[in-house]
Image (tube, rainbow, N blue to C red; front, side, top):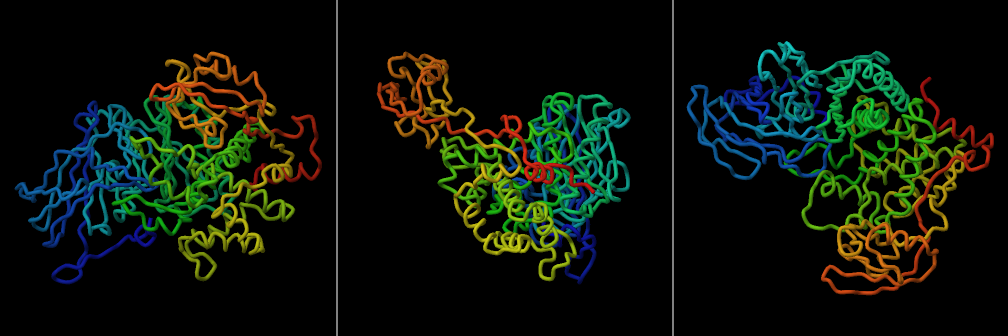
Length: 621
């Protein structure tokens, strides 16, 4: 969000008689039929001039980079003056409504449907209202700087008596169900949970953290869970050396752990939304991983912001070249902090790191797009649902694991070349001081969103070696190289090796056994023997050599009896029903794993033990 908008608390508008205080925008939300998943919204716009009132539903949402077109769920739109007289409303485009003729005040009423519990959409039902503001708020162009008041009305008064409360980063208003925002940008970035919320609270370094849980577990489970949440908060504070100043005076975790929720996490400036169908007792580490990732965002991306998404545009997709850093480095720190906090063990961490390394090394897309280019694919891949077939499995690596693998390489490289004195934590603190922290000490860097060149400059400062920074960015950010992970991880006594050494590999093929033969139902990896032989999605493998293959298991078993380097024939029906035969040279399975030296029959040297401890042990002092 644009900082000048977020922190503005008193703004003025210019009217025909000179400067005067701008009238606030007010919203009232009521839920007359929660069982049918819609909400009635009344918005009042005051102190208007004579220009047409341009009303908008957002097309995108802070924290998401693609188009979501929230207007698709809005209907029954009406506008009226204070006297109740209906005003004519036109629809100039799918996300806009215009009131051409009006007086100083306009009341707009509409209904909005929502039935998805995640970080992006609206959910209304008999158990709660879960609101991401862009999915529910109709705003007026040109009134962005007006203060906002928002009031909720429960489905019936008994809901409040039964414990329905509101959790949000919005500022408290005059009543328990009234809230305020200084402007549209702050409002649109402030999710809200209205329901039977269980609230927990703790303080760290004079900062208050609230955890608002709507879940199916017990109070004891939540209490134990909170101890781990506090450990995470402390460890992440140690990475940056301090916490941001949260504008409402606190930071709020909004957690919906419900059987009908979709798995998601969405960061906001002073809060985060975390949703999952899992219960605390069923997937505690998975839920805490999301807590760790999302809380790290209160520094990285919410305050340390890429220049190319500043300010955030609600009318279009928002593209950035730096999501490898904004999202990917956050992805790296999520599980790393769980390890440092003592929540998970080395076995959990090495498996997580192995996934990152395997993706970075073996994904065919790395040969086609750099980390910057992968970041720029977000408007297509971040929650988008194309109906046409894409080639993304072969051409795109998510900037989440790709960026996390780059963060791993940079962290280990800095430690290796400085004997552990300089780390990725130092780089993140430098980014915070120069580009995130209000009133930062370096002249010229105060409150300044960063570019890729800025990030390279911070690495040069931290490492003391501009040539190293330039080479790292050239090879791994703008270039398409993979880091030497085996060497880097060996410093910590971790061995990178083939997961299935000596095993033959045709390719990672997804096959449907319900057809004649084993039909391939996903993209064939472009770096696989199957791809080189001409197999493609829709082909059904009927024979491997002389072996009849009527299922995916038959194919896997037939391949498993061979060796890497064997040349065999594959007979298949293409999607037109034509029988074809191709000759294939099997490769060795390329997928990687990471094992601890001591688990592989070796032992740690003192230097490896020291390196690992400095990297993976708690940083809280």
